[in-house]
Image 1 (tube, one colour):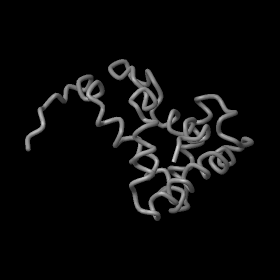
Image 2 (cartoon, one colour; image 1 turned 90 degrees about the vertical axis):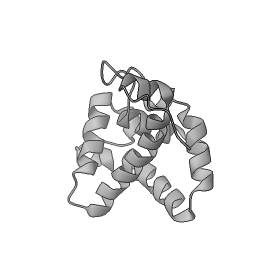
Image 3 (tube, rainbow, N blue to C red; image 1 turned 60 degrees about the vertical axis):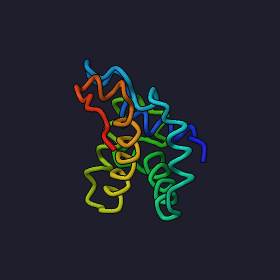
Image 4 (cartoon, rainbow, N blue to C red; image 1 turned 45 degrees about the vertical axis):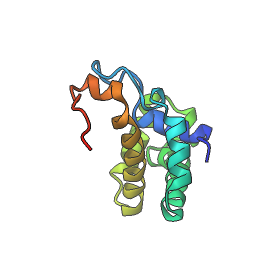
Amino acid sequence: MALSRSARVVFDTLLPASAHPQLPLGVLDTRFDAFYDAFARETTPLIRNGLRLAIFTATWVAPLLIGTRPPLRRLSLDERERALEAMASSSNGLLRQLVVLLKLVAALCYGADRRVREAIGYTRERTA
């Protein structure tokens, strides 16, 4: 499952490049396309469909939560962040859980990147 244009916007909003001085890399700088393709292909159908729903909802519903027209990609980074935050803090539990799924997928790839781990001081070697 290739990373769509909408998905790229959603994940880039969650973990953009240069969001923190110690972390110049964004999630899209960490081979996220390959990770996402493998994750979506190998996960269960329930999670795969949930991920599609999460991206769709972030793209088309989240902007409505802050009173702007969708899709998410037409908004500035600040507006996109506010829209996803509104989705994450919604009174609707399903909307909140969809954001959790998006963050989980982004974090799995981001935290696995050696450069990210080095930037945060986590350089412990793996043991078998």
